[in-house]
Length: 315
Length: 229
Image 1 (cartoon, chains in turn brown, cyan):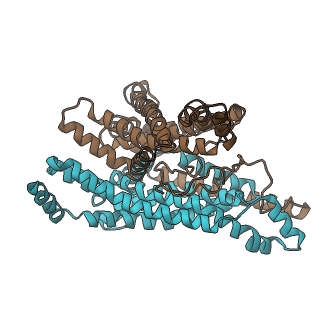
Image 2: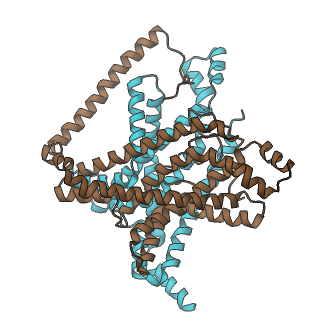
């Protein structure tokens, strides 16, 4: 929760405090009643029975289904984020390069891969590699699709990171005799990379969530395995719930790490460290393209809306 | 080469590509409406001074922002429909369509909530203090001073969420909506494997055409509406 005072509400006086306390209790009772109703409905369907839940907490469920699934999910996500980082830095440098044709090519590539749904890319690569008899086709399709999409997102992080630096950084680099390319490579991009580190960790959450799309192309990740566990024990609802909880725990931890990094790294760069790139926040797992760099929106980090500059990305 | 084009042209006669995109647009439209409603309610809960409501809003956002959309989709069909026998329509196809819309809406509502809340957070505290100083009470201050600025600040993140929703509507494949683009693309490639590149590019460019105008429009809108500070 944001520590700063809400803009809509004054500090409450005695009357308002009493009303808030009453409202708090009423709302809590209402919510509790809703939860109880839901649980009763589930119980009536027999979904809370011990024999539905017990198979989940056996060694067999974890060693044969959930842990191998989690390992496959993490394997794809780890490889994808490394690949995305490499591709993203290359494309990002291309997007802020001096040569106009390099900028144009990188812009088209980045915008294309950010506009195409990740699932379409996955299905395409999956069927293409199956045609070519590539072994482990679903795995590589997941990784490749995630690398292309997230690489474009990282390219935008690099670009907005470079644009977010104070112009004095480049001017100083040019003043001591560096060329523009040298200034980019040894002064601007390194600082942009530090500034984008928290956003990169946040992007890992998106990668992890999108890796579950591999379920559709038969990749044996966590969702697929939990479904198999659910069909084996006739407790699909419970198995899916456990898979969701595992995803939530991992992703929540990553989010907290990103916030911590944003706080601790801010002294290491002249740019602003936020858990998202300007205009890239709120990607809902699908990302977006061509958005405004305008008011970014994390409540706890002061952003500088206009410093991130740059107009529509196809310009 | 002429052979390629004639093959490619017959594809469009045999498969309803535009119809598939229309399904995705419909999914997006209904899910966007529903997500806007749920997300606004959640945002109101999160910014309200009542701790229990704020807690529920925060919990919802934390849960759904960190869950893969694919799980929610599968949960809707295999869990809510398959296990709990919960139906949204007697008709098989439209039941899956509606379940997919609910899954999309429930997931994106968390992002709509955060977009609206971030809009409210772009309004500096001084605006509220100034409104109070010239004698406006709570409702007029909210209506005349704070909320108009908050909506302007929320345009860009809401636009991002809409774009994400358009692309994520393909995940409805996991909920058994067989007429949408990703399923159709898979079928087309499986039966016309020599045209795999052309088919993929057709669908990819279709999404570029859908997504980029939305991006350009929300960027232009948020720039025009931006509050100079």
